[in-house]
Amino acid sequence: MSEHQPEMVLHADRLHAGYLPGINILNGCTIEARKGELVGIIGPNGSGKSTLLKSLFGLVDIRDGSVTLNGEDVTRAKTNQLVRMGVGFVPQTNNVFQALSIEENLQMGMFTKPKNFASRLDEMWDLFPMLADRRKQLAGSLSGGERQSVAMARALMTEPSVLLLDEPSAGLSPVRQDETFIRTRQINQTGVTIVMVEQNARRCLQICDRAYVLDQGTNAHQGTGRELANDPKVIELYLGTLAADVEAKTGAIKTQEEV
Image (cartoon, rainbow, N blue to C red; front, side, top):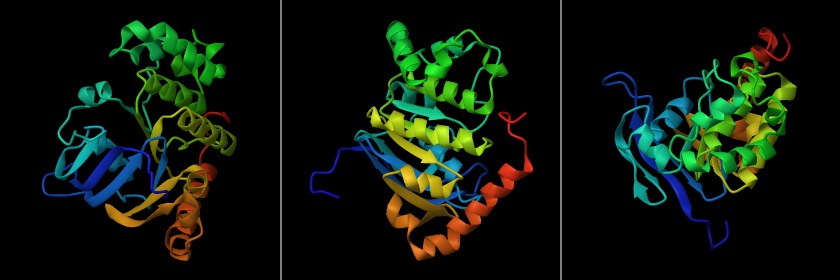
């Protein structure tokens, strides 16, 4: 990197966290994301990837370590506080209000800044034009890829400085996966820092600036997307296995787009 690095937006240092007393899923995980970066998180199933994002968003208690957001300690901050401070989160599942329309879903994302709703809504229609024409349609009637777009748009309504994406391509057909990755990069190019957990490791490494490989809740490898995609150890230990997992999942189920 150059001597003049972008300012740090998010820094998680040696995190230990878990769901059950005395059992950690994260075991000293450390990541950082600088302004304007797209940071990928990959690794085997059960490596702690989603737990990491949930810890950063206040959904899992951090037992040791620290998290700073724009230089401020947010280790013990609650989810609603983090939203107000500029953190957006898109979970893998149950990420839309199915009984509400697309527009109403986006309105739900503006609870912290209701006065800015109209202007932000116009910006989301520009970023997600496929949603604009169907704004009155119920979110529950949308395909998986369309729901993912609604969830992303809702998270962006509050103008977050960092967006956390948990497995955005999971359960989507290959075509919809490509659309999701393109959309993620477009969002990043508007200036939003993105930390993305992703099952499609090779595609993730193609679009991210930097990435971390997690294994058993700690850092196994880190580097630029290009470096990791061409690292013999990463290829041998992770990329082949992860690619096989993704292929098995996409081949075993009919996605909502294909039904």
